[in-house]
Each structure stands twice: as C-alpha cells, then as structure tokens.
Amino acid sequence: MSGFGIGKMTGASVGNSSFLQRLGGPDWEKIPHKGMKRPTEAEFDGIVDKLAKSLAEARYDQNDGKYRNIRSIAEKATAQYVSVVSPDRKALAKEASRMSRPNSSPQKYRGSQKLD
Image 1 (cartoon, rainbow, N blue to C red):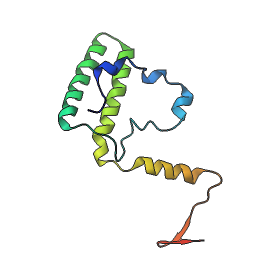
Image 2 (image 1 turned 60 degrees about the horizontal axis):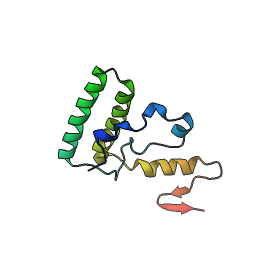
Image 3 (image 1 turned 180 degrees about the vertical axis):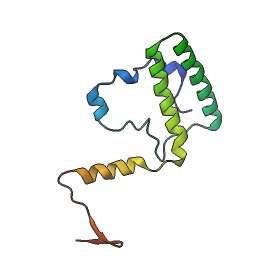
Image 4 (image 1 turned 90 degrees about the horizontal axis):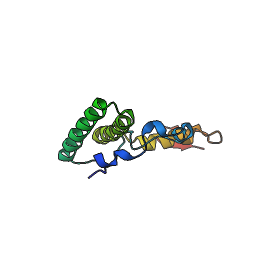
C-alpha cells in the first residue's frame, strides 16, 4: 500500500509548516512526477472512499484542522494517481536549479555536439 491511511490524519497539517520550510524546495509528495510510488486501482478506490467520508465528517463537524490534514492526504493521493502520465519533473527541477546558479554557465551545443 502507499502509506495513506485515515489513521495518519493526526500528523501536522499543511497550515502548520513554517514559511522557510515551504521555501526549502518542492514537496515531491504532492507534485506528480515520473517514478512516483503508486497504489493499485483497487487501493485507490479504497483511499478515495475513505477520504471522501472523512472530508464530509470533518466539514460536518466544522473541524478545520482535520479537514486541512485530510486535504493534504488527498493532494498526495491525487499526485500519485496522475504520476502515471507525468513527466520527470524531478529531473527538470534539478536541471533548472543547476542552470539558475550564478556560477554555472549554460552548455553550448550545435546539433548534438557540445562546443567548448
């Protein structure tokens, strides 16, 4: 299984993370990317069912903290579901980060040959 469970909803909610932690880099658990672990279709059906019931209960109880935490779990499940058709965003992000560093210069190519 993927590690999603309704019992895990007691963890820290998304709103509790500090501003600096959010700037630390992408949250690869919530961004669909190639190679992401993915539950089976049957497991997804169970996850979606539990999340829908839990979201409805949290809304009914007007428990915003629980609702945000469940939404965070739902975002991760959505990313896993979409990851099958997602590009390799991790590699793209690493390349963009490498290219944006002040002391790195872009490689020059003509066709498929690197120019020095």
